[in-house]
Image (cartoon, rainbow over all chains, first blue to last red; front, side, top):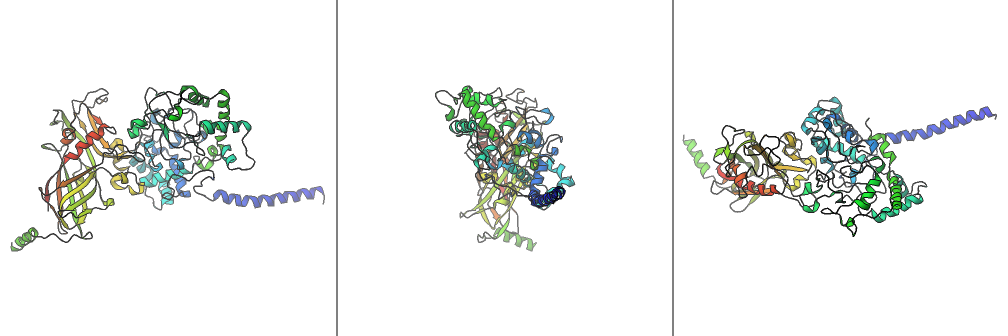
Length: 347
Length: 270
């Protein structure tokens, strides 16, 4: 066999190999797996039994998520303030920037791992993901629309009657169907493929570097009681000692009217911090070092300061090295696959 | 003529049937909204109402939820209308909504019980079970006369709005200068931790005004007068100038207590 023959054979073999391999891969992409709980995550909180994620429901939800008709003048979509490349936050905006250039009072939180959320909004008030979209749609500074108008606009579009029929059997648009489709899209937005996750799941040879490991140990010692693994939040509402701003946002108190809830805000997840600046409920810190310095030296003893921060010296003492190591570890929570996942993008 | 007399007689002497939960007949409660000694008129700017504090006002909006209707006989037998058929939104501007029409067993009832508002169970149910008047999309959302709070997920039980010249134009009154009062009373008690509950269960004795004789061949109607003046003049009386806007706040608990006093039984049409 001369060299030429060998090359031809080799090329043929490659083709055969390629064919064999590509066939099942194509099928895998096309098969819709629905909601999949990552193996290192606990059971979901969202009632998936009452709203089973289907391909058609998810696709309808995604279309609605990127639909400007949800806003009064058809200019703002959910995706306007929840941008995938920023882990579904509004990058660069301290507070959300909505319709007619109106500004809200809080930082857009990420649409991420919401299936594990017990409560919504920085200040609570919403306890069911299905009820959550009502807030931005009807809020004056966000979409400033009402549901009846949204449904009327969508019902007039053959695209939507077809999508609702595919997802729910008939063309009718109801509040429950609309909300559940959006929930199907949102619960699918699972971020669980950061380096941290792969290390925890022992995927391949993934391991923390020495510095990351050091940071992880500091994290477990100083941060994990509120930012509990693997979601990096315990879902609770706490006062982390931010001095109240001029608007005096009282957080959870507004929804419960209990004095003990004053200045408590939801503990945010620490996943995808590289993409979600600025930080805190009002986006007051532009960088992670700003956040860490707040815990080190900026904690104010306002009403209901969390007991974990209310020691002899308020806050969490962090040396420069500790801050560096912590930051190094926190970056292992970035999930690039999540922010680039084409399934979650506007189609 | 004789036949008519006979019918009339038989009606009068109609004995109370055996209480059988399967033997249902039509029954209604009528919510006839009034304002003190006067009927309810909207935007009555030419002839204002006057509350006990001497403040003149007009009314522009009135809506409230009535739910969970229960009836009781003299011997203490009760019937609770199945919950899914027991939610009504009374809209003061639309007279056709003034009846809560249900089905209850044939019997003579001496008491009716209902809820002003939406019970906490239904307030937290899956959206699939919140249709009709309970649909958060119903009546155009909070800003448009709707009865649902998105930001603090729950229903507005009682929504009452109007104008009063006594309202100041500053932050303590109505900064828009429209001199509007707004009472949006809700709060089902909290989802995970207890918060304020403004759900009011109201029981009215019908013996003085006439028992409800519910039979298949008639429409027994318990006619209530709902006196909106009690919002201001109830046991926690307040002035519009002092509280022109009450929504989800501790003070709403005080206003909600007045709301229980609004309902009185006037008569029964059997």
